[in-house]
Image (cartoon, rainbow, N blue to C red; front, side):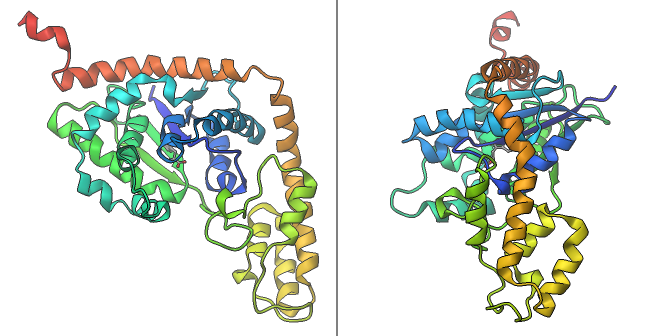
Length: 344
Ligand code: TRP
């Protein structure tokens, strides 16, 4: 039987929002039926931006587990594992070995790193840990390689589109390692969702807590309503009666992504004709989003009473079992299987 694994992860820096859902989580949920799934709580990677605020990460770990269960990830299934990154020391070890295979200049060419470095600002400059996080992410992924890799095996990584450069980098490392030493790693297969990205409620490219343009999965109905009513719409449609351009409107994009598909076409044509005003359209959206979020809120409330720590511990243990197999092969390939020198 072929081994079909998923490895993907998230940095716990706060509760998750609709952008996470559309860009990543929605797909993860569907894939649980067909794959052995490892969902990585990347608390170590979170330190790349939050080293001065470790308590924020600690609180976020709990929030993210609740959000995961809320959207329908199910750690009580035997094939679904929640893994705490800091609980897998093999990841740190593999990261160090991989840093020997990746050039500084290669990482600096990574477009996601470039964009994130620009956001960090020039004040302090990026830490070594930040610059090397794509290498540690390659370790996150490749640690879970089916081993020995066979033709029909799969290592699928469902992510938002901003992560694709990291997956390309991961496969450069995998191939380089396999060529230079032994064939240990199966290159991963990126899987990017259909929409990939939901803009913020202000219409800006990305939902991000620091921009205050998010709708969190755990927000209550009134908070969602308020946030939606503040949303930006097509700038050229100032009042009801003005013709609108749904294709340029973030509210319409939200309707299209998470709203009622049966009424979507009418909504677009009534917007274009001017018949439908933005306020009414936003009220509809608040209703639709709340209807979408209700079952998530309900599952999340139930999860509050579940043994969340046990799920993380069990998943982390399972990850370490796989890690032993991979690392044994890696150390052997890199001539790091310590006693062997003495046995020659
Ligand atoms: N970089 C990802 C993010 O910003 C989180 C992450 C860590 C990840 N390790 C991973 C994603 C491995 C996919 C695979 O959310």
